Amino acid sequence: MFDWFAFQTGATAFIIAFVAAVLFFVAFKFVYQLVTPYHERTLIREGNSAAAIGLGGALIGYVLPLASALSHTVSLPEFAAWALLAGVIQIVSFIVVSRLVYRALAARIEAGEVAAGIYLASISIGVGLLNAACMTA
Image 1 (cartoon, one colour):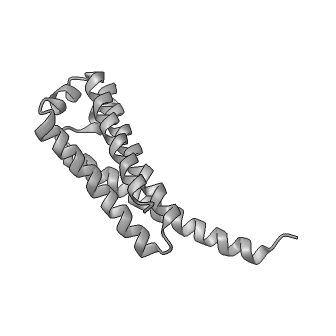
Image 2 (tube, rainbow, N blue to C red; image 1 turned 90 degrees about the horizontal axis):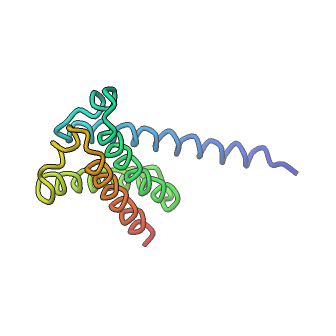
């Protein structure tokens, strides 16, 4: 028999978690785009695939630990702390890669070099996977 009360309780928790995750996702995207020295929105509108790939990788790289935090935390404040840490790690990894490891990265992305976008996306997704895995401990 269907337990309506259990469903309502679960659905309410789902909606709260989903809304919180979407808000963190949007906030991350906003902050990430402030940190990058180029304007992804403009570049993507102009058809720059490198910018789209790089941003897409960063977003996926952030959502991976966000999903892990959703499944491993028991409260909204705990989830928020992990979500914030995941965003910081993702942004710091961009800063390290673009300013120390591969200094020409921003210029190459602005020039539309897809290889640079793929490289950035790969780093971002790799960092996100490691970040998500570390949250399971």
